[in-house]
Length: 110
Image 1 (cartoon, rainbow, N blue to C red):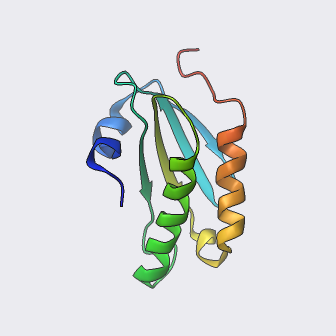
Image 2 (image 1 turned 45 degrees about the vertical axis):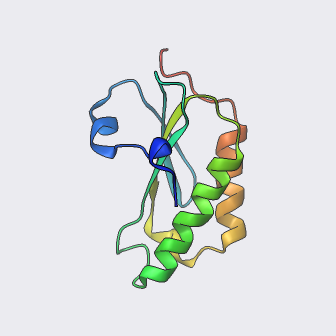
């Protein structure tokens, strides 16, 4: 579970205009700088991803673990999980998250 300080309030984040979007096969990342200097993240998995809540929560845990391991430095990250992720292996999801987080982060101010 994510600590309360590191949880991203999704409603406030979606109202912001300074975010950049990066996509992979199963995930859509919305990234913005954080004025508080704290890494915050949220993962949204709908019922279309998988029928079973156990699998949806597993996907959330895999993604949040990888984000927590990455040294981002004051970034808000919203991850939208697409329906194909329910069939993906955990390693594949980890690799997709690592790929996005290792790539040069888009600068929301530009």
